[in-house]
Image (cartoon, rainbow, N blue to C red; front, side):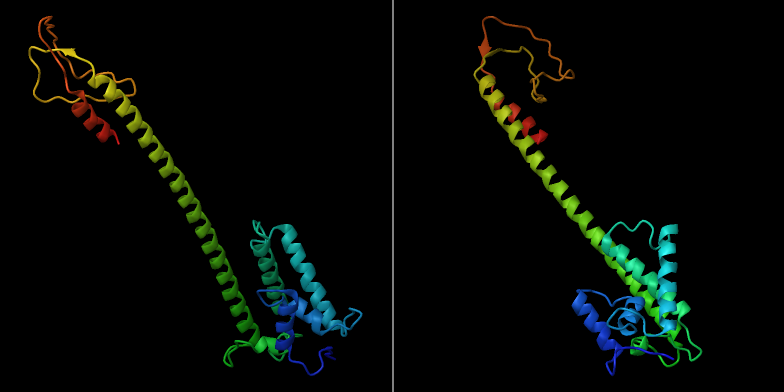
Length: 238
Protein backbone atom coordinates (compact mmCIF):
# COMPACT_ATOMS: atom_id res chain seq x y z
CA UNK A 1 0.00 0.00 0.00
CA UNK A 2 1.28 3.46 -0.94
CA UNK A 3 1.49 5.68 2.12
CA UNK A 4 2.70 9.25 2.49
CA UNK A 5 2.58 11.77 5.29
CA UNK A 6 1.69 14.89 3.33
CA UNK A 7 -2.04 14.80 3.93
CA UNK A 8 -4.06 16.71 1.34
CA UNK A 9 -1.13 18.95 0.37
CA UNK A 10 0.04 18.93 -3.25
CA UNK A 11 3.51 17.50 -3.90
CA UNK A 12 4.30 20.56 -6.03
CA UNK A 13 3.63 22.82 -3.05
CA UNK A 14 5.88 20.66 -0.88
CA UNK A 15 8.62 20.78 -3.48
CA UNK A 16 8.41 24.57 -3.65
CA UNK A 17 8.44 24.88 0.14
CA UNK A 18 11.56 22.72 0.30
CA UNK A 19 13.28 25.07 -2.14
CA UNK A 20 12.35 28.10 -0.04
CA UNK A 21 13.23 26.54 3.31
CA UNK A 22 16.56 25.15 2.12
CA UNK A 23 17.48 28.14 -0.06
CA UNK A 24 17.71 26.07 -3.24
CA UNK A 25 17.90 27.52 -6.75
CA UNK A 26 16.68 24.26 -8.25
CA UNK A 27 14.05 21.71 -7.12
CA UNK A 28 15.28 19.08 -4.65
CA UNK A 29 16.19 15.62 -5.90
CA UNK A 30 13.44 13.02 -6.22
CA UNK A 31 14.99 11.04 -3.39
CA UNK A 32 14.88 14.10 -1.12
CA UNK A 33 11.26 14.73 -2.09
CA UNK A 34 10.36 11.09 -1.44
CA UNK A 35 12.00 11.25 1.98
CA UNK A 36 10.13 14.44 2.80
CA UNK A 37 6.74 13.09 1.74
CA UNK A 38 7.07 9.45 2.86
CA UNK A 39 8.64 9.66 6.31
CA UNK A 40 7.16 10.29 9.71
CA UNK A 41 8.18 12.83 12.32
CA UNK A 42 10.86 10.46 13.60
CA UNK A 43 12.40 10.21 10.12
CA UNK A 44 11.38 6.60 9.50
CA UNK A 45 9.79 5.63 6.18
CA UNK A 46 6.03 5.06 6.13
CA UNK A 47 6.17 2.29 3.51
CA UNK A 48 8.75 -0.29 2.55
CA UNK A 49 8.68 0.31 -1.19
CA UNK A 50 9.63 3.98 -0.87
CA UNK A 51 12.37 3.07 1.58
CA UNK A 52 13.79 0.39 -0.71
CA UNK A 53 13.59 2.66 -3.75
CA UNK A 54 15.25 5.66 -2.11
CA UNK A 55 18.04 3.67 -0.45
CA UNK A 56 18.69 1.70 -3.62
CA UNK A 57 18.96 4.86 -5.71
CA UNK A 58 21.21 6.65 -3.21
CA UNK A 59 23.51 3.63 -2.94
CA UNK A 60 23.75 3.32 -6.72
CA UNK A 61 24.64 6.99 -7.16
CA UNK A 62 27.26 6.90 -4.41
CA UNK A 63 28.84 3.95 -6.17
CA UNK A 64 28.83 5.85 -9.46
CA UNK A 65 30.57 8.82 -7.88
CA UNK A 66 33.21 6.60 -6.27
CA UNK A 67 33.84 4.79 -9.55
CA UNK A 68 34.14 8.09 -11.43
CA UNK A 69 30.90 8.83 -13.21
CA UNK A 70 31.26 10.93 -16.41
CA UNK A 71 29.02 13.50 -14.73
CA UNK A 72 30.50 13.36 -11.26
CA UNK A 73 34.12 13.18 -12.37
CA UNK A 74 36.13 16.38 -12.88
CA UNK A 75 33.43 18.48 -11.22
CA UNK A 76 35.50 20.76 -8.99
CA UNK A 77 32.96 23.50 -8.36
CA UNK A 78 30.67 22.70 -5.43
CA UNK A 79 27.55 23.90 -7.26
CA UNK A 80 28.39 21.92 -10.38
CA UNK A 81 29.09 18.81 -8.30
CA UNK A 82 25.79 19.22 -6.45
CA UNK A 83 23.87 19.60 -9.71
CA UNK A 84 25.57 16.54 -11.18
CA UNK A 85 24.70 14.43 -8.15
CA UNK A 86 21.07 15.63 -8.23
CA UNK A 87 20.90 14.69 -11.91
CA UNK A 88 22.17 11.19 -11.19
CA UNK A 89 19.74 10.72 -8.30
CA UNK A 90 16.78 11.77 -10.43
CA UNK A 91 17.95 9.69 -13.38
CA UNK A 92 18.23 6.54 -11.27
CA UNK A 93 14.96 7.27 -9.47
CA UNK A 94 13.07 7.52 -12.78
CA UNK A 95 14.68 4.33 -14.04
CA UNK A 96 13.97 2.29 -10.91
CA UNK A 97 10.66 3.86 -9.87
CA UNK A 98 8.56 3.09 -12.96
CA UNK A 99 5.14 1.58 -12.28
CA UNK A 100 2.84 -0.58 -14.39
CA UNK A 101 0.51 2.41 -14.70
CA UNK A 102 3.15 4.35 -16.59
CA UNK A 103 3.99 6.69 -13.71
CA UNK A 104 6.93 7.07 -11.34
CA UNK A 105 6.38 5.86 -7.79
CA UNK A 106 6.39 8.36 -4.93
CA UNK A 107 6.47 11.65 -6.86
CA UNK A 108 2.80 12.59 -6.76
CA UNK A 109 1.84 15.64 -8.81
CA UNK A 110 5.47 16.64 -9.38
CA UNK A 111 5.80 14.11 -12.18
CA UNK A 112 3.02 15.75 -14.19
CA UNK A 113 4.76 19.10 -14.33
CA UNK A 114 5.71 19.99 -17.92
CA UNK A 115 4.39 16.63 -19.11
CA UNK A 116 2.52 15.78 -22.29
CA UNK A 117 -0.43 13.43 -22.60
CA UNK A 118 1.14 11.83 -25.68
CA UNK A 119 4.44 11.05 -23.93
CA UNK A 120 4.83 8.53 -21.08
CA UNK A 121 5.59 10.15 -17.73
CA UNK A 122 9.02 8.50 -17.25
CA UNK A 123 10.09 9.52 -20.76
CA UNK A 124 8.89 13.09 -20.22
CA UNK A 125 10.70 13.34 -16.89
CA UNK A 126 13.93 12.02 -18.37
CA UNK A 127 13.72 14.43 -21.29
CA UNK A 128 13.12 17.42 -19.03
CA UNK A 129 15.96 16.25 -16.81
CA UNK A 130 18.38 16.14 -19.75
CA UNK A 131 17.34 19.62 -20.89
CA UNK A 132 17.86 21.04 -17.41
CA UNK A 133 21.30 19.45 -17.20
CA UNK A 134 22.36 20.85 -20.57
CA UNK A 135 21.16 24.30 -19.57
CA UNK A 136 23.12 24.06 -16.33
CA UNK A 137 26.27 23.12 -18.25
CA UNK A 138 25.65 25.97 -20.69
CA UNK A 139 25.30 28.51 -17.87
CA UNK A 140 28.49 27.22 -16.28
CA UNK A 141 30.34 27.61 -19.59
CA UNK A 142 29.07 31.17 -20.02
CA UNK A 143 30.22 32.02 -16.50
CA UNK A 144 33.70 30.63 -17.23
CA UNK A 145 33.92 32.59 -20.50
CA UNK A 146 32.96 35.80 -18.70
CA UNK A 147 35.72 35.19 -16.15
CA UNK A 148 38.24 34.62 -18.95
CA UNK A 149 37.20 37.85 -20.68
CA UNK A 150 37.55 39.78 -17.42
CA UNK A 151 41.05 38.35 -17.01
CA UNK A 152 42.03 39.40 -20.55
CA UNK A 153 40.76 42.93 -19.89
CA UNK A 154 42.88 43.16 -16.75
CA UNK A 155 45.97 41.95 -18.62
CA UNK A 156 45.34 44.45 -21.44
CA UNK A 157 44.92 47.30 -18.96
CA UNK A 158 48.20 46.39 -17.26
CA UNK A 159 49.97 46.20 -20.63
CA UNK A 160 48.58 49.59 -21.64
CA UNK A 161 49.90 51.10 -18.41
CA UNK A 162 53.36 49.67 -19.07
CA UNK A 163 53.36 51.04 -22.64
CA UNK A 164 52.39 54.51 -21.45
CA UNK A 165 55.14 54.42 -18.82
CA UNK A 166 57.65 53.37 -21.47
CA UNK A 167 56.57 56.18 -23.80
CA UNK A 168 56.92 58.73 -20.99
CA UNK A 169 60.40 57.44 -20.16
CA UNK A 170 61.54 57.57 -23.79
CA UNK A 171 60.16 61.08 -24.26
CA UNK A 172 61.93 62.24 -21.10
CA UNK A 173 65.27 60.77 -22.11
CA UNK A 174 64.94 62.05 -25.67
CA UNK A 175 64.28 65.61 -24.52
CA UNK A 176 67.25 65.52 -22.18
CA UNK A 177 69.64 64.30 -24.85
CA UNK A 178 68.25 66.72 -27.41
CA UNK A 179 68.83 69.69 -25.10
CA UNK A 180 72.44 68.67 -24.45
CA UNK A 181 73.28 68.00 -28.09
CA UNK A 182 71.71 71.23 -29.33
CA UNK A 183 74.40 73.16 -27.42
CA UNK A 184 77.24 71.28 -29.14
CA UNK A 185 79.05 72.83 -32.10
CA UNK A 186 80.26 70.25 -34.56
CA UNK A 187 82.73 70.71 -37.45
CA UNK A 188 81.23 71.59 -40.81
CA UNK A 189 81.16 68.69 -43.26
CA UNK A 190 82.48 69.54 -46.73
CA UNK A 191 79.90 67.33 -48.36
CA UNK A 192 76.76 67.09 -46.19
CA UNK A 193 73.84 65.07 -47.59
CA UNK A 194 70.61 67.05 -48.01
CA UNK A 195 68.50 64.29 -46.46
CA UNK A 196 69.56 62.01 -43.62
CA UNK A 197 67.99 60.52 -40.51
CA UNK A 198 69.54 59.58 -37.20
CA UNK A 199 68.23 56.52 -35.36
CA UNK A 200 68.10 57.23 -31.67
CA UNK A 201 68.95 54.37 -29.30
CA UNK A 202 69.40 54.56 -25.54
CA UNK A 203 73.11 55.44 -25.93
CA UNK A 204 72.47 57.68 -29.00
CA UNK A 205 74.91 55.81 -31.25
CA UNK A 206 74.71 56.59 -34.95
CA UNK A 207 73.41 53.72 -37.07
CA UNK A 208 76.18 51.72 -38.76
CA UNK A 209 74.37 52.25 -42.06
CA UNK A 210 75.12 55.96 -41.87
CA UNK A 211 78.68 56.45 -42.94
CA UNK A 212 80.21 59.89 -43.43
CA UNK A 213 83.65 60.82 -44.75
CA UNK A 214 84.49 63.65 -42.41
CA UNK A 215 87.00 66.25 -43.65
CA UNK A 216 87.53 68.44 -40.64
CA UNK A 217 88.16 72.09 -41.24
CA UNK A 218 89.73 74.00 -38.31
CA UNK A 219 88.70 77.39 -39.72
CA UNK A 220 84.99 76.82 -40.39
CA UNK A 221 82.53 75.66 -37.76
CA UNK A 222 78.80 75.76 -37.58
CA UNK A 223 76.05 74.98 -35.11
CA UNK A 224 74.09 71.93 -36.21
CA UNK A 225 70.43 72.11 -35.35
CA UNK A 226 70.02 68.66 -33.86
CA UNK A 227 66.78 69.32 -32.09
CA UNK A 228 64.80 69.28 -35.33
CA UNK A 229 66.51 66.19 -36.74
CA UNK A 230 66.49 64.06 -33.58
CA UNK A 231 62.97 64.84 -32.40
CA UNK A 232 61.47 63.16 -35.47
CA UNK A 233 63.12 59.73 -34.84
CA UNK A 234 61.99 59.93 -31.22
CA UNK A 235 58.42 60.41 -32.37
CA UNK A 236 58.72 57.49 -34.77
CA UNK A 237 59.92 55.22 -32.00
CA UNK A 238 56.74 55.94 -30.10
